Length: 291
Image (cartoon, rainbow, N blue to C red; front, side, top):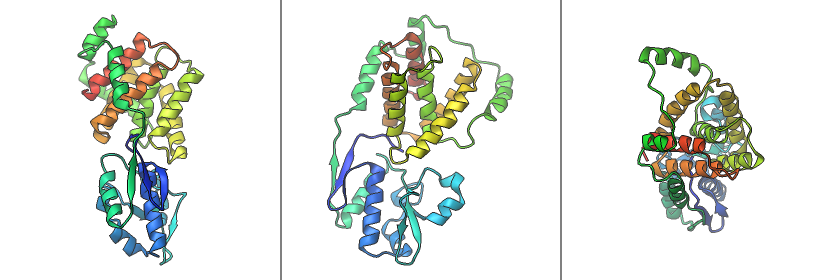
């Protein structure tokens, strides 16, 4: 689920395709053009091209284990093969795993062209860092804002509270879950009233991470919103924020983490007021990400 502003054009197949859209379009086109059966399609697009998941999988298997596969395959765009099998294509593609697929696509005779986008998350991050007064660390940023940092809780108390808090979180934690939570920490930071401008940018930025699956994005949003709004204290939010940082660092590259910070900067400015409280949240995440 990588965030990248590059789109692709494949001659005779499609234009302005996202990474996951590129894969779905090429596999679908190849399967239909060559009248493929399931074994042939698997041999042509082996699992190792994706890295962690199957490039193509039987629709019946995806539906049978929806908790495991939901949101990860193009279930609304199935492909019927010559042997009557119905398969779906994985939608989990980003800058870290798309190149092997592009190389494979070219070896099959397709012409793939990358289309650069004007948006530059690295520049946005540089602007954000300047707004944060180029603080060298979270502690320095907090000091400049006159914020006192809380002492770490006793380990035994923390373990006991963690068991209670974990029972409230969504059953499935995705990378998008962490992103939505971080976004909410900014837009809800100063009060519980979210402006139309803030929610519009929040929705836009969240959808960019998986624009091929709006229903999945909306489900994750609803789960995180209910979870976040149920939290009664800042301490509880901090606890889960740190947990989700570990999730994000495990799933995302450094560039993707920087893109998250860039989005947070845009959210903070949505209402025209980049507050100290919002700067504190973003500064803390910079520190936690190790950026």
